[in-house]
Image (cartoon, rainbow, N blue to C red; front, side, top):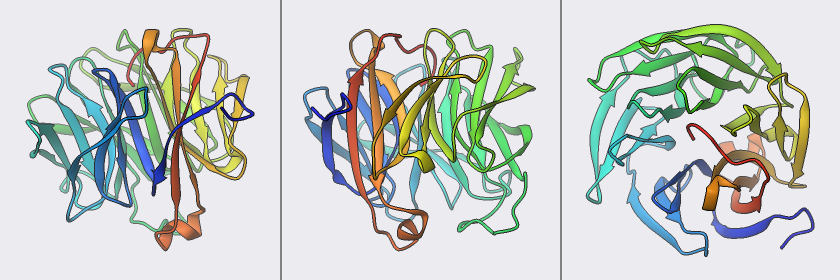
Length: 283
């Protein structure tokens, strides 16, 4: 147990991302090690797959329980089933730049963040980011534009709300989801510097991994900060609610920097803490 109430579950990776609670385990990727892994609440970790030619990042879970994993630079989605990676969608003709994070809703629709540029980010980048919707039949279309480095994405349990963090904007963009999956922009909510991964709870609050603040921040539906969990000296990368009653907040962090990441230097950790308000939606 650490002084901020966090319990460390895993402290042996490089750069953990995209946590999703599924079937009694937390599933995630190690971007730098190019692996898909999972861990149970006791800390028992398994490695399930390796990506030889690209960097895995975003993940999601289809209604039938299969995992979807995004690879960034070749812009592909894979399904992990029966211990194998199977091609699911190719977004190379749709995405303008590197694809980053994603989420799959309860209807099997995948929402994918398109940065609009290649990495490392150009210094003069603007609001070039977009969200790509991949339907269960494999068709894909742009459903949101004008985002400043779209990162973590979350969807409410009723499939009416989507929020996406804008890493360059210091905010989360809030959208209304139409029945056909299209998005209508509503507002932007402040959420700390360089927001990365996010998740929603049952009070419509958003947990945000604030990369540049070394903290996981909970903001309410108006954008007011109502809770902060600090991880001093570590970048906050991503978070997800799961465990018994969805009251465990899993916090993924790394001892690194933007410059170190470019050199492949990073040390990842997964911590957990019990929270009062349970998770709701995706992830």
